[in-house]
Length: 445
Image (cartoon, rainbow, N blue to C red):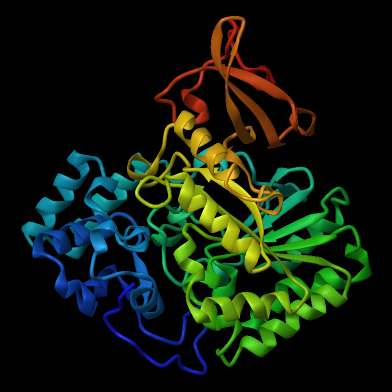
């Protein structure tokens, strides 16, 4: 892999929610030096799509992860740079016309807002169905879909070091407060947890919580060490920092404080897991990435890895097998292989369920048992996490074999069910019950 620029990693940062080096957004996309090597038409297409889908990239990603000698075929380029096919042709044409006319920022933003409504900003009913109540009021910034697990979205963590083009949380980043899930009210979260002793896991998510300084993160996590929260056994932190900002754990001035916080949580008796998002083995190849993984593991924190199966990025068994083997070698635990969610740029990334199951099975055949901890392909759908276990023929009917890995109703977990085989289906809503059934069992509830 070749790079265009090299730079020295700065030693520290004085800014909240920002990495200690240059970050480019949609407004400054044209200033990225490496883009000057691309054809003008492609640069225009990137700018058009970035007006609709959120765009952000930092210098570490640009200089260390992307092969600028062949960006067209580079998975990391497609991971962070918008592509024309991510929008419907008619939507792209409308936005391109405004850019060609040099329309005002207000006009571009207004059209972007309308186009985003076509992209299912909050899939799986997360804005309407997962919001808990506290003293009769809706609790902001909290999601409680599964009995044992509560998600919390700290306000200061609702951005990322760079944005993945497939991100199902893209609505968090577009500046629309009506679509954003966030709160800085830790007292409300703690009050809710006191009332729900069945909750054993708290997941701090975003955005990316590790854009926050450690002192801010500690305000949300350290109260969970109090004896009254003994029922909270596990603390999870969802992050892409090991890929997009590994310096956070190593050379950043706040790194020692972060490692010390993680160690305190572990010594305090909590099972702490970094839920690390990986999409390609390339993300673990830099020396800084390896140092970051080692630094986290030395704190006693477990690293579990997850990511979606994506067209143009990782839709082949060899890539997943190499990804999982590398993760196990570095001491991480493969956890989930997801299906691209029905939101955002899904038309560009989605893979038929039949093909996804085939890729997963063939990848599993290439790894040892230590890597076969990755569950999938899994759809995080409205009723729960549904795993596609494979395709079978039963009584002469070809069917998908499915089961719930997690569910709104705990009684559904691990319950198998069957859907008619459809080679074009990409999501649970595309499937029909097998064997002449009118509805799936969970739909009846």
